[in-house]
Length: 230
Image (cartoon, rainbow, N blue to C red; front, side):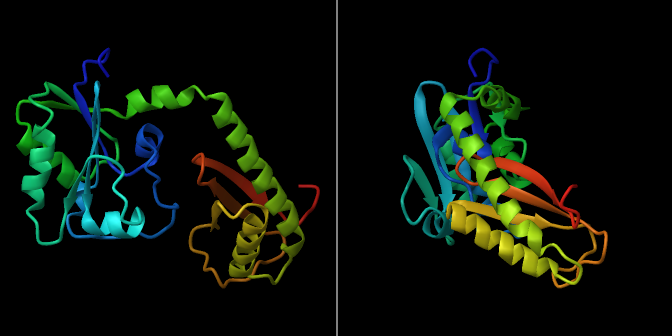
């Protein structure tokens, strides 16, 4: 950050925040939770000091099991979220450049501009990406573990891919196999746009399955075919 001239950075809940601080993100899904003051969720990070987390009460209660990850500003439903967020941002002094995660809420960006009018807001995600591109030995080990679980679940599920099976049945089978091999692995099964989960598989059709390993944030996209040699 210092080399890039970035004095502080706001990172919303994401794989980047988990990578930087260890605060686990939610298991990826096709849904979205909406909380009062949800836009404040995230952490301010800066060289030379510990992260400062700003979290809605319900995020803390329902997603972090009530355990504050460190120095935390908790925003209750009846609180002035804008004022608490501004106070947290201003506790970093008068930064000239502030990085923001690429998926930061628009409301968060607007409030940052109001709280730190002197600061230039820049995309901070490339800074984290540079760190994440270089894998440690532990990361490589965990990625290999995630792929081995996905391979085993796919092999166990493949015989079920037959004309007449429904996509929800395949999803349930994959979920079962993932949990049987490692209960920390979660998955999402995606099919072609417009398909319904209770729709049956027709001859010669295939499915794409996306496996996501929570511990490392690793993802693997695989194809189920009705032909074993494909």
